[in-house]
Image (cartoon, rainbow, N blue to C red; front, side):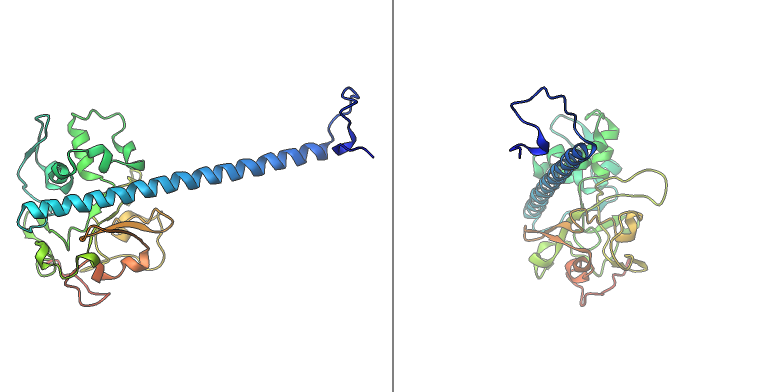
Length: 278
């Protein structure tokens, strides 16, 4: 009996024997399995890297937000501030209008102007690919689609043209927060409209589960639905979202955990508490 598989011998390399169909199928199957395992392993490593980068970013944003409060006698930066004062970047560019009404450019000083290293990580980078960093479109995109959104309705405030929304429930100063470690500041977000354009990974604010008549969809998270169905929160990390809290720590939370309004609104009396817009 031959010591070699399939009957061929190293001593007889020129016997002219061809591989059988079964032998070829076995080899193809083995290669296919190895390739599948390799791709799965690579995807897992890539996802782990994206998750780690976003967790690091969430801590950076929380620290920057707290630094702002320290510089403003405990005042918390509004996530949206209609008519906010213009700012000037280190290169002399003036940023005004909607670009500065949203939080990213107002907070940029506290992340040492490292816009692309903090706001535009992972897949969010594609939103500015090819844009001139000095262009208005670049500045607008940074303001619109940072990788994490602020808990604007409950922390810091959402100042529309008509005034502060949810005035009875929002906290605007850090000393008003009874438990910073259980108060959400930033969370993974995305923007997917009801129709038309595709999905952007990142959005500048997140909407809590119960905001007057506006409520999250019941049931499991479905990324195929428009993003407003889940308050623009994106559970992109194995059905969990990266969350940063007002004490500076970060956590990965699922949709059922984030349905608890007590994580969003420091004044919420129950998990199903409903905010009032006015």
